[in-house]
Each structure stands twice: as structure tokens, then as C-alpha cells.
Image 1 (cartoon, rainbow, N blue to C red):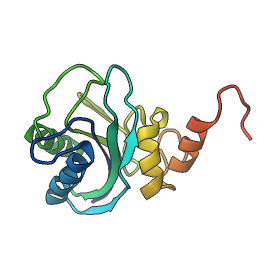
Image 2 (image 1 turned 45 degrees about the vertical axis):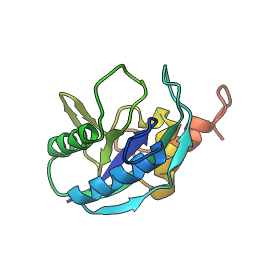
Image 3 (image 1 turned 30 degrees about the horizontal axis):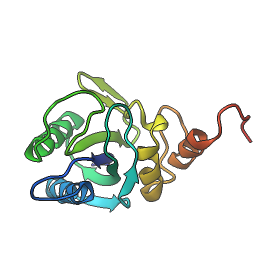
Amino acid sequence: MAITLIALGSNRCHGRHGRPAGVVRAALAELALLAPVLLVSAIHDTAPIGPGSRRYANAVALIDWPHGLPALLAALKAIERGFGRRRGRRWGDRVLDLDILAAGSTRLRAPGLIVPHPRIAQRRFVLDPLVGVAPDWRHPVENLTARQLRRRLLRPKGLPRA
């Protein structure tokens, strides 16, 4: 079994689960039906990236996933569809977005699936909750901890490293 990091996000209301934070909580409950959820970050309120206009509720969960990552991706996509997610434009508003961030030290490139997620280090909306639950998690490619990745991202541009 491998400890797997899952990002959860929502910025649209759902008829049954309400506001985005409620959608994230309901998605966590669905995730717990798939595999043991070991830790969950606080839900963060974050600004959208790209053309989206609504603020997001974002969180990170650590799960103990006993199967292959393609099977996990299929299960996450099924949860998204169950919440009414429809494929649309990139970075658009969405009821639910579930992403595999990392699975231990695994490196995987397959159609539709790259692990670790290729943009972890550039996304504060991922790093903030990730630092909350796994500050010492080490990125298998960058070889930096979640805390170090966040610090690097927040460093004012143009300033030398300390």
C-alpha cells in the first residue's frame, strides 16, 4: 500500500452538498469509501487561476491506496461525474476537481496521468493545504519538501536565496 496525496477543489455550488466547502467535505466522504483517509488538511479559500471567476475551496487528503494509480484515477473521475462534473474548458468553474498529486516516490507518465502532478510546485492552492498535512513530504523529482516548495513559491521574484 502507498500513501497517496489527493487534491480536492470546488468553486460551484451543488444541489445537495451546497457551497464549495460542502462539496469538498462530501467528496472526502466519498473518497473514504474507496480507501482509508489518513489525514485531511483544512479547507482553504483560494482565488481562481485563469478564466474562472469564483473562489475555490481547496484541500489535500492523504489516503492509503492499495491498488494501481490508473485504477485510482478512474475512481476519482467516477466521483467527479457523480457530483455532476462535466468536461469543459481548462481552468473553468467546476463542481469538483480531484487530482492525484503524488504516491510515495512513484514517478509515472501514462496517457492522462502524470505522477507526481507536474504543477505541484507552482500552485499555492495545493502547497498551502499540503504543508498543513505533510510539510516534510519530499517531491520525488524536485527533491524538496512541501514546506521548501511553498517557501520557494512565496519568495519575492528577483531576490536571491537565503
